[in-house]
Image 1 (cartoon, rainbow, N blue to C red):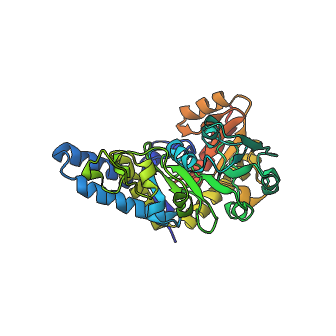
Image 2 (cartoon, rainbow, N blue to C red):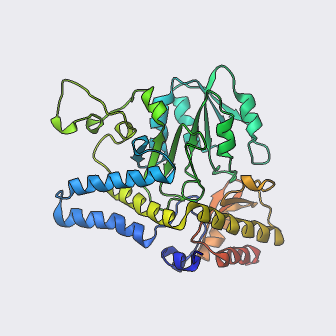
Image 3 (tube, rainbow, N blue to C red):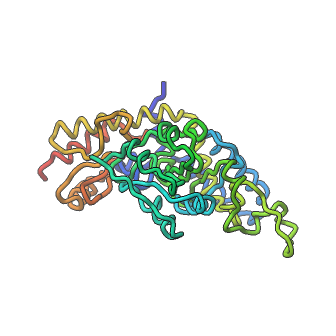
Length: 370
């Protein structure tokens, strides 16, 4: 049994506020903060003498991230955000065909493809959800990529990736995991995912400037990188200017220069914490709090716009209808209750460091006439 109260104590933000905003940016644990600041302390005290040590620590993080999503280390590159990862994926798949996505997507899942003049076909959502059958019907001889978020930032809809992978046929399945990595299980092999990108600053709880991208060995073997750097070659320290011998791993395509060590080490510390708790335990905890939240919202008359009819579609974020979202968010902020403003209302996120009292405090504030 996990003592969630003890885990909560590792997050100082819980002492200062009711933080229900991991869908925007997750707070850091003490261990994650220490992982980043220890690097800066070494750089402050010693300059560059720890370079080789830092490179080995980077490879440890790569191995941890690979195990976290059931990938191989050479399929993982360490990035700074979702957008950088998505563009690396598009470099590999831009000749694979037109793209199927949906009208709920965060633009990083669509605009980079369009920027390459690749048509993107948006499957229409119904009541905040997208049906797998509608994605299947969108497939044709011109389409070759399905690009979807695991969890939608807009409504909290969670797609069944295993089911989606089972119907993809010859399409490459590309997943934006920004709103799910760290809260929900991801198994790239079982789910038949060809490429995936995620940021660390949301549910991974590792801060801005951290993230990762996965590109399957099959995709790596059949494509060439569009962008490279001095570290993309087999022997970068040879300083050759007259020939190129490229490495064939994902890192050669994304880690083009000197690493952002602080973000990488922070990500590694967060993966350590999440792995120690068990992603299935975290998923159950986040969903349990989400169920309590949606029930209590219904009890006091607030309308939930997130799809709740099928439990498999439920995520750890909830869109709540509000006539004046800005006013509601500002009112809550005065009471140190932190949520996100959205056009239709407010978005509430329940992660494993949250607890039942956080939910009740939100409900009490929303019910108050003041």
